[in-house]
Length: 114
Length: 219
Image: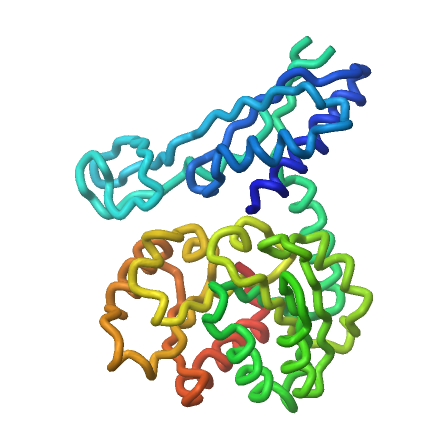
């Protein structure tokens, strides 16, 4: 259910940026969301579509790019990505000495406006 | 026309969390955000914790619930300032909700503020509210698969309190697995085993959190 708060934040930022740049309508918003945020894509779309009515984003489409979990293994010195949100060991070599540095993204990348 | 935006979606929340944090710092109050599933024992833990802190430090509570004031009433009996937030359906507290009630608390007179988040293992971990530390409470009746199913909360927390430990003989739960998996997600996690009902293990947790406050150690 945090999807509703996230959808509202996306709309707030997009509407502000649209007006600030002197445009009147938002047609598309692209966001990137890391898998570690446990954001359910369908719930986010549902919330976005419900909240956008009667705003300048009324006809906007939300494009969600899901980012995998990524990290670097200090044992095999390689970077890895995985769709598993629970990484116990390096998916490449099984080593335990690794750090996670990707998967918490929650960003608006760009949008199309008129 | 395409516009590059490149903004963090939760920036509004983070901005307000930062303002809350500045207010807490200025008032000299150490803030603990307590998160767990419904029924894990957050209110019981606070009752036991605050009754041990009372007399040494001045504590206050912000109580988050979807509806109702039952928990706040329980805590008010300890003679401390309690503010209730009803989220009206929202499954977590965010920085703005906290900011709106800060004027209702005598912040300058407090040493510690406990924020009892809405019972939920997912969303509260996403929203910083300006706290010094996040603490997760897990009752062992919830099962030993919780770290692997809800890793974010374990990752974000400074301490994990395992409650209802007195029930261990009656359950199939593997407490070592909970600890092992939690530490794999977050090697710095401090783990306490407590029973609020039997008043076991509470002193260890309380002296840890008081110590942390005294050191002014921030995570």
